[in-house]
Length: 144
Image 1 (cartoon, rainbow, N blue to C red):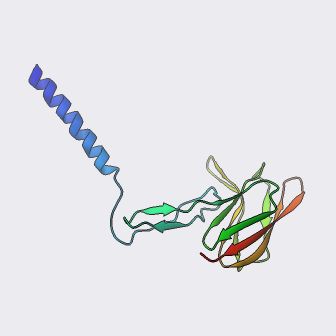
Image 2: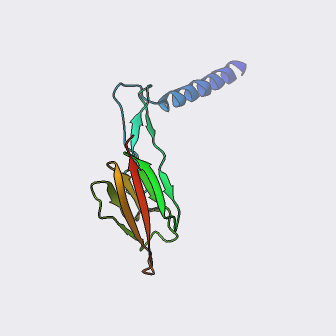
Image 3: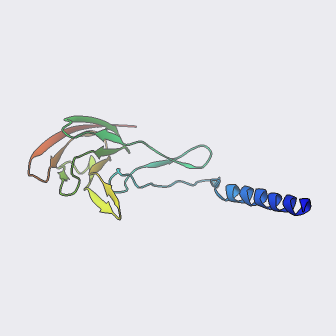
């Protein structure tokens, strides 16, 4: 009976070690990835490879409802938090500085509108709420 118990406990322990080993991250060189952001909006969040070879996401620049200014670095993603993402649209005429991402739904996940900072400069994002009201965000993008 005791031998059977030792075999069962050992088997469970080895199974646990195997599961943990399968969850470890890859260390192959040159690995990098892009991660969906809700922001992070349209999945345009940036990811940068860390020295260990694993990818790490940059945090988004959060702009709250009604905020008038924001500053971002090239490569940053700007997440515009709105009360009602469905029906809210954004626009910017400075497409060389900001890449706009509209609010959208993917399955049960709802993503806010946002923008990716492409180049240094100044841009204006106009947010149009579902009720037709608008507000502008003056964005300054700086070099990394």
